[in-house]
Image (cartoon, rainbow, N blue to C red; front, side, top):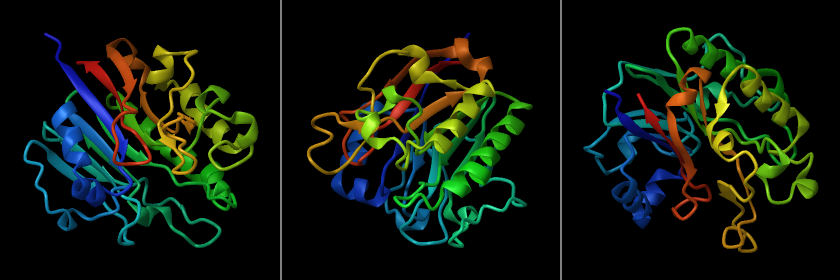
Length: 266
């Protein structure tokens, strides 16, 4: 008999802040996901006072304190857990920043699939990290999940830091060529789809506008829903018929991002 599980992904923009404000606890009590992929935790596990007793916790924190970081929380223990991408890769950008040290990927293996939490490097306002994104990171991450896929299907969740198409942001013309909406970033995201991965939310709502997951803190952007969709749940094509629902939760507060998720039958 198939079992339905709920998988959420959320860039929390500082887990300790969310705990302190009570927003993270309120979210967990209301939605109680079976697997939760986190990005931008900005903490090491030992810095977080709360023990989430319902979950096994798998953290990958940045070397730099208070920066970046990913985690996977799961009610079912993972079979294996790995951090980062291939250690032989050169993921150093033009300013000498090494993405390998930034805690950007956690891969947790479960019985029927891999769950991967990813926090893709931001291109930066001056686009200084576009070469890293275009020539190194996105290609390396795609190779990582394709390699996993040889063993079992993959669910790649996280902040990909790119709006794929015009429909994925409120003001595409004004933002064309800016970070998160350059042709280089969009091209590399298309590579995931061309490789057979499914953008679960867009598969369910191919033409629906206003589905955003990040809002600027300025000019009441969130209240006016002037946002961007840069957080995704991608699945292997083999799971296409197993996805029962795909959604965003824009009413969940506590971060400049909102959670995204799927319900999966396995």
